[in-house]
Image (cartoon, rainbow over all chains, first blue to last red; front, side, top):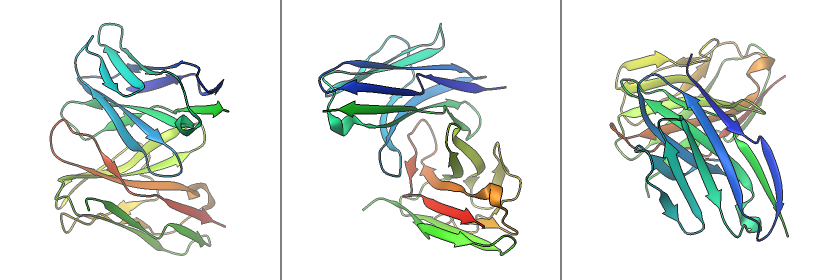
Length: 111
Length: 112
């Protein structure tokens, strides 16, 4: 059965710290891996990764995919309180509309 | 503005009373999905639709129905809600191909 596992499930850091969130997966016919940030309600899109070893970057956030070892990491440098959120990883398989989500990592950034 | 609109945002209902949560998108997306989000379980797919009149079960379809009569609308129907359907529900849409999903603002449903 396809699955997506995120770790840690929760994390508390202080402003300025760097964090690394992990997402491992087992999916038949992998197509892409997506990261979302969920603050109050609706998840908002961060990155889509389809190729191994190519880093995607947006400001202080970056992500990379390893298709051999079947995982991705999301890095946040110089964290701010506004980074506090649930970070969701989702994997999409070819041939269907199934976007399977992990349980999420709840990140809390303290002042 | 491109968006996915869900209604209602909050709903408290009683066991067995049929309800419908509406979802509408204005981006002409082919794919639409419904998810429920429960603590520690992430987002689990209930139903999805790849086009008009085409719907398929996701991971947790029991107790739910959907329809896709028009491209923009994808309502979620609970014929006889039960307390275990108390959850936060999200509708999402996306374009065909390798694209990200856009989510509605969520519907917080409580069944007592």
